[in-house]
Amino acid sequence: MEIALQQTLNALSLGGIYALLALGLAIVFSIVRLINFAHGEIMTMGGYGVFLSLALGLPALPAMVVGVGISVMAAVAMEKVAFRAMRGASVVTLLITSFAVSELLKVLFQNGISARPKPISLPPVLSSTLDFGGVTLPVIAVVSIVVTLTALLGLTLLLRRTVLGVAMRAAAEDFDMLRLLGLKANVVVATAFAISGLLAGIAAVLWTGQRGSVDPLMGFFPVLKAFIATVLGGLGSLGGAVLGGFVVGAIEVFSQAFLPPALAPYRDAIVLSCVIALLLLRPDGLLPPAKSIRS
Amino acid sequence: MLTVSDLTVDYGPVRAVRGVSLDVGEGEVVALLGANGAGKTTTLMAIAGLRKVAAGSVTFAGRALLGLPPEEIVRTGIGVAPEGRRIFAGLTVDENLRLAGSIVAPEVEIARREALLDRFPILRERYRQRAGLLSGGEQQMLAVARALLPGPRLLMLDEPSLGLAPQMVDLVFDLIAELKAEGVTILLVEQNVARSLEVADRAVVLANGQVALAGPAADLRNDDQVRAAYFAA
Image (cartoon, rainbow over the protein chains, first blue to last red):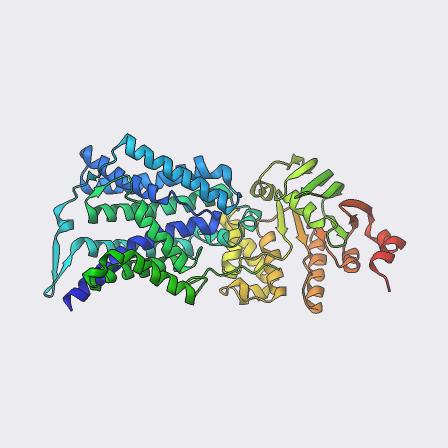
């Protein structure tokens, strides 16, 4: 029972990070049709932001805020420098561009900082455990879940209640029409990137909190999982990205916890097989985006 | 108020609009007519900044529009209700209108929205519903209300009656007549030539991307060429 509860918590905390990353990918894709392969590097930059702030002597909490801020700035800068000139290009062209950005940044991290992991020491309270009615729960997992849910709630409110949020939903349906109403394309796109950076930054802080280090490939692997999550949820669907993130996280954690050790090396294969099986049942994803009706 | 001169627009490898000139004076309703593929919508979208223009010029209220992005063109005072209505189906009626009103001051927006909801009571009734659930005619009302909300000096309507039930078509043309009576300047693209010539002051007929005929609507109604092409018994 205790193990089941702990693993559920782990599944939710890992799934939450995937969900944040997948949501950032989905928001950008839904508006500019860009599958941003460099999203992982936005996350990695957040990790280095935390590392450098700590190295400069900042306390943990401000260092985390700086890390998130760096991710936001990295995302907005990436749009301005690399993607704005390519707006309206084909999905493939945009994808290749993001590959280039991703590779370039990885090389910069490797040569400019270090190819080796840099340790991040966060307050011991994060790595301690919580005694919850006789059940021991890791604090970082609880914190991750709370932070993820808060971020998701905040984003939902933004998308429902603010003009900019409504504009982003509208942009996902019909970007040109939004411009015909006088809303500025650059503002809407920059906001989408800023939000994706914010979510990636939060994911970076939670990830470094769980792993205790940052390296040039830190963002690469979780974002790979987040890609799977967005496809599983239905490419371009925000709710689907969140659901997909949690499903991928759950399959990963539970297969690690409950598979016989002999099968452990095949964990990723098993996760992906489950995803393929789900996609065979629902080819458009679990929660496909609503198709806009154009006559 | 709006002057289009020698407008030329390429649509892929095809020259869709070839040297079209037209002008719309303050308070006038000008109908842009022609068969399917004659270049009407392309002309309108080029004025709105959504199509790249190969040559020519567009001036509105003394300002050159070519080269401006659509959002800036709209902000000079042009409202667009495009072909196919293009309401945001996943957003509520309220949200569709709020977006349109977001480019004017909040007090102005509230007052104008109230006035538009009085004009289109059905939109008030369906205020919190998703716009995709509205009927075609209701969606057209929403598209027009959305275009009118910021208080444009020129309204461009593209095929507002297309695909609507006959009673709804009547309603749309009544609306255009009402707006005209209120002094709204309108550039109307339509396939329904007979009804358009009833409501318009002047008309421009396009064929193969060029102006085939232009003149007062009353003259065109009796023109043999127009009668032969559009009122064939």
